[in-house]
Image (cartoon, rainbow, N blue to C red; front, side, top):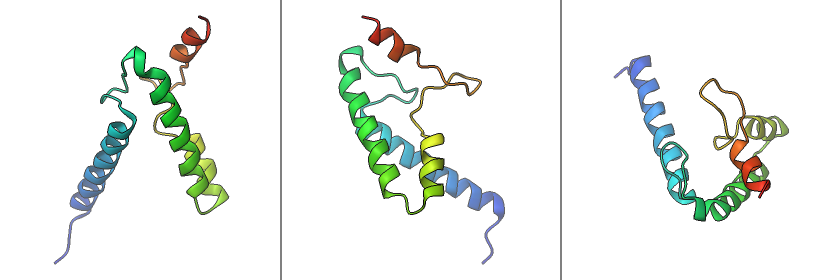
Length: 93
């Protein structure tokens, strides 16, 4: 039986969404990336460790560069620009 490209794409999207939600659950993040302020430092530490572990587990240098450049938990605004406002605000205290 032949599966249409649209169904294969949908299945891949569902799998990616499930994996992202599992990562958010492990980190303790909501769907929009929001976290309670009192839990921010712990969650940020888990995210940094996860990033390091994921990059280390990559099989090639190209994969490591791609993972680092496109990390799923980097702060971006709605137009895709990086915005580290939360980190900079917390560091100014």
